[in-house]
Image 1 (cartoon, rainbow over the protein chains, first blue to last red):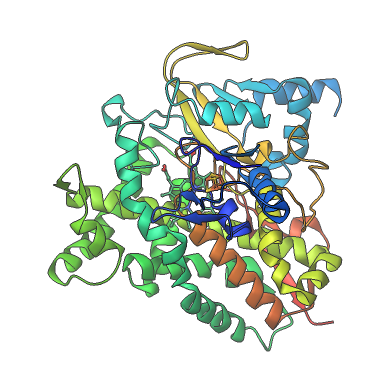
Image 2 (image 1 turned 45 degrees about the horizontal axis):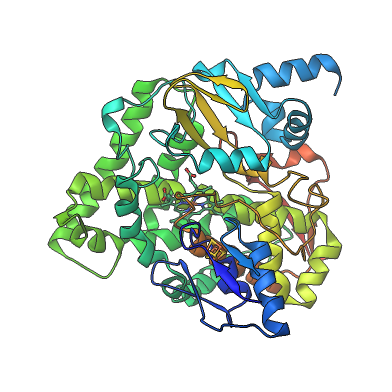
Length: 63
Length: 401
Ligand code: HEM
Ligand code: SF4
């Protein structure tokens, strides 16, 4: 499982990095930056799904 | 609702009518089920989408819908104002929009907003300290209202003591939508003249605040002129005050009438950020507007150029397609993909500031007054603002017990 992040869709709502700071950070303008982790472990998959489900712009998917 | 009432609402709704102001939720629910993109002839034609998917599609379609004005009135601002509009970036369309927005974003980044937590907390304590000896007070007028005014005044570099002055301007712009155009223009010019005085003072005495920052800022290698600086500062006042005041007030209103939720947050303040997202969803304070650029058919609706769209993020937040049990306030709701700060390129630039203010305001209120309720159970004792920013303006609270 990996995080797919669509930078074009991200509008900087900040739900992802507030909820799951271990996987997402924010840049100087408040848009998301995904920590490069490659394959996710079980806890990380859970965190990634939490962020994906809360992103208002549907910018995050976990596949 | 019976059929006649429905016929009324789907063809003649008015977002400033007393019924809408007091309780808009049943109106939106009714429309979503029967007429999801409703039309009214008021204000020269207004469309109202109530489904999340339609609100999202319109917010993301800057080709067919323009932000040239985002407040529904009887007048359309002149075409020449595009693509900047009267108050960039909220009134701007691409491509200009992006430059005006990016100029502001770093100041409102989560990192910078974090630095304002201690001063915000201190204001909240000061306001609450003044109420310690009272059993009943107005939590909207005496508490919620002051927090965003003081925070934004300091951030921009305007005297805190002028709070009443700029709150008056903001009120006229947001709630005086039925007033004649000349009067509305006069108010806006008076606001700009007030700001010009402070801009001159910042030119003479630069300091570490937003006005000095904007005076140095460039778009495309060109400094902003003073008129642009004044319009941007004006926007931050208009966008930052009534909105946040409404969100804090609505959250306190909910907690005053829902003791179980209040007790949960008192017992475990670490739940407050999650609860704030739910208050923002359920009582989303801000509805935006767009103008239809050219005649265009949307979801089978024949939209005419220069008709309004009321872009109801609050109605989208109650759509059962996206939210389970949308009418229930679940303070631990998860997931919560709400759209209170908008969707698409105009997503609220101040959202991190607003969230911080709401969180700190609730933390401090619950610490100072762990037990409180509505002073008067009559719903008419609480009054709500009219127009596109919705929140309690009179909220009598009784503490202790
Ligand atoms: C709970 C409080 C707030 C809510 C619910 C809210 C809501 C919104 C919404 C829905 C938009 C989208 C506008 C559109 O689509 O046309 C917006 C834009 C904006 N808001 Fe807020 N807002 C809040 C507080 C603030 C604060 C505190 C500030 C800053 C002082 C602020 C500054 C802005 C700005 C500058 C924009 C325009 C962004 C752009 O056009 O790119 N807002 N806000
Ligand atoms: S929640 Fe979505 S839109 Fe917001 S910062 Fe994260 S990815 Fe971007």
